[in-house]
View (cartoon, rainbow, N blue to C red):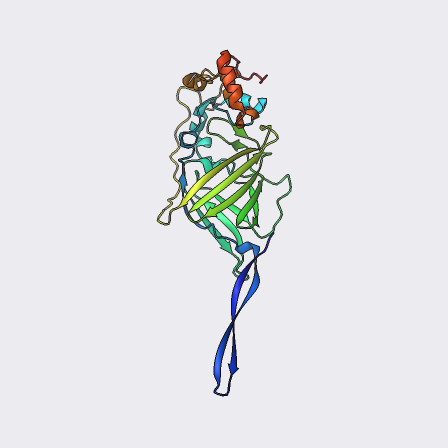
Length: 309
């Protein structure tokens, strides 16, 4: 952790002269400010979606994987996903995991937990993202659980200060997702975050590492605006029955290569199918050159699950 110095004024009173005149000498001295007191992130925060609104609500289309460093296993899993899966009662109650929670359509409340004895900020809590799960960011130096410890939707997070930026490391997250179209994250995912506050704007930088489904780290940012008048209500569930037209216990899915909708996104926007498949190279600006070459050559006839050349 880092300590930041700041100037503090001390008043020293002394007696001077025969007439008993009291003078005040103001001395300025540097005092080390504890790392846990750098900046306060607590408050009511409303999401800003002007940057990438269609990709967050309603979410990316089926088969829209570009800009995401997926491996073949991740593509195969996403191609087999059926949105009707979310109608199953056990899936209706799933909250967004911390690997995706900031991207979902919801506002949040951040509060600080203060040690009553030392007055140090021991943790920040977050509440209000989809599913109303409460997440805790521990700042008191506690270690992460052992590898075999249970995984939860929010995982286990610890943070430390780098100047006014809070850096957070998260482990022990359940298998979840990083996009709302079946792109999954495994229970081996770890996440680094940077929280940066500029007055009424909060910027969250998320970096995901997943050895199961990603070939490179996946980075994205999300912005929030302070909303003091915001009110967050309780979470309600009104479960529905099993998927209509199927026997009880049926799990919606598509067999490999059988998803009839996987090419719709590419066809709708007139781009090569291969460009939508989520290779790491599609994250970088240089990919525009390759995309132009593919379009000029009339590429895009690769079958689902194919590999990049």
